[in-house]
Image 1: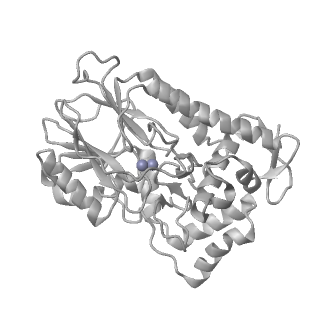
Image 2: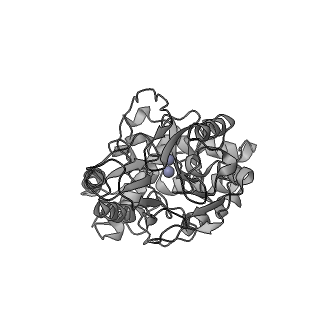
Image 3: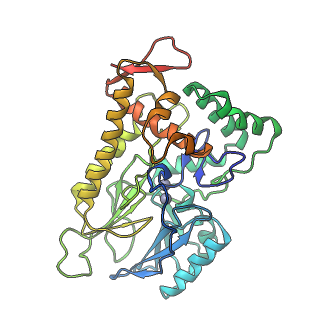
Length: 384
Ligand SMILES: [Zn+2]
Ligand SMILES: [Zn+2]
């Protein structure tokens, strides 16, 4: 949820006035992941390639940036983390695909997180390519650009206090606020896109048939992109290929927190949005999924069902914790099962855990399965 002042990991992007992890929830990844071996540029056939672009100091290893050939020139799906080594990997990857940055015609962004949108500004600068994004995520980009690090720290500190976090947890944030040691935030100079990605519409790619599918949940404007063309390998079942961004990953559960949009209604339910988005993708039945992390896989409906089961399990656990006892959000977060004991979860990841628990709690509140206890400070909750 946050890169803590003393923990400069940069893995998680603070959104404007709030925070939205850039990367899938490390708490739901294997506790001791295999060291990520960088995959090579892959030719997926039919004018589609993937280029691994490293994410510095992140267990995820890399973002799989995709390249689609079109009659107007090659188009990127996502760009990767804004870092000199990552840029060089993108440049070398494009060369391995037989093209270069200057030839790029456009950039399609699945969502605003910096491991996806980080290099877009530089790509546009060097190629003149347009950048397209769903307007809900473009709003987040605009807000993040106009939010100072102090505003964000203040917001986060307030949120944690309201959740019932102990003083020992919020102390480093208070210290950073008073000593002014706040660094710049990832996303503060991210490119403002040129074009809106319109849900359900075909994208303006001459000679290709690529449709935008709005899949809110991981972010409010996350999109998957469905290449509605026959898979280049004969005999595959299902229609075409799906660029799934962070929505559907083969071995990691994407992080779901609240959208952190100032003034957003209490009825906003990102987890509910995410579960609906899973159903939408399962119904598409693509022949293959090309995700933005890890590796391609085939059975989208099966993976969607696993992810749904994971969240349903967490909702049940939360309900059990709220039955017969009132608890704060912080107490709920500490008591939930994560991929390692709470004592071993570091500061920044604890904040992600709070956000994840909050999205699940919100889903129960919106559904009328849980309720706040009137007049409690910090707020406590119970099963309804
Ligand atoms: Zn990502
Ligand atoms: Zn993401």
